[in-house]
Amino acid sequence: MENKEPTKNIDAPLCPKPSKKISGGILALVGYILSPLSWWNDPIINIPLAYFFALPFGLITKSFFMPAMIIGYWGTNVLGLLLIHHGAKKIFNQDRKQQKKQFLKNIIIATSYTALIFLLAKTNFLNLPDFGHFLKK
Image 1 (cartoon, helix red, strand yellow):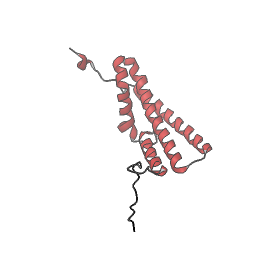
Image 2 (cartoon, helix red, strand yellow; image 1 turned 180 degrees about the vertical axis):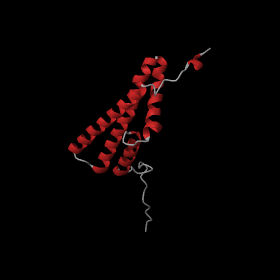
Image 3 (cartoon, rainbow, N blue to C red; image 1 turned 60 degrees about the horizontal axis):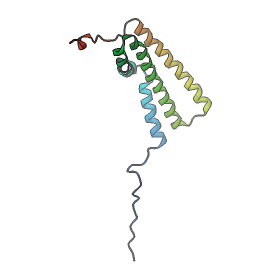
Image 4 (cartoon, rainbow, N blue to C red; image 1 turned 135 degrees about the horizontal axis):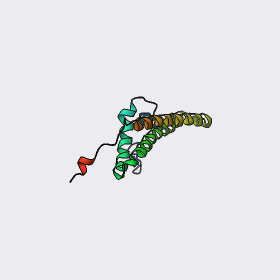
């Protein structure tokens, strides 16, 4: 009798792909952290990300800082909402009509938060730091 050992598939990946629900959950979690749906994420995550996004533009000229800050802030919120949307789609397999309705609601929320950040910036609550002491010779 021959002893036949099962052959190993050399081309198989080292770890299997995560299921759609797990990857959808991870996407939704990261999206939630970036989205305007959590109240705590703005001072901890979104505003600092938008600020660091805007700094190089502010170094070019101060007038670029505020638009770049708004774009960066809005971008983090929209990215978060898109990640939630995509993650939930993977988890729940929602129908198209319900997805579009939720996506529109998320865009309205993100736009509202953008208006708030714009007002905070216009009232000088958010300022470009003075880089003069770094640039002195």
